[in-house]
Amino acid sequence: MKKQIQNTVSFTVSRDGWTIGKQGLQLAIGDENGGFRLSGPKFNGSGETLLTFFLDSERDIKEIKRYLNKAMRQIRSQSKIEKEETI
Image: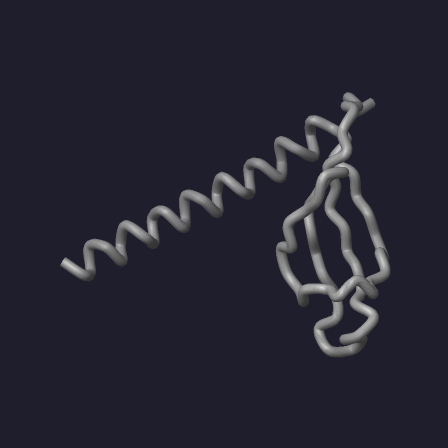
């Protein structure tokens, strides 16, 4: 059984009421105080939440963190290469 934690952080997938069919899906991460849009259009307030996934297990959080750390290493490595190319 996975260890449950009390958390309000979640990923949400929403559909914009104005851009349906034109990249109208948005992926965001947030909590009760607000959030950060990861992809998709900015909404004007007419969106509909299609899916909410609460980060409620240590395993989920550790796996997501592992991928974020990998992405950070790749970005830092690419940034280092670009700096060396400009010298």
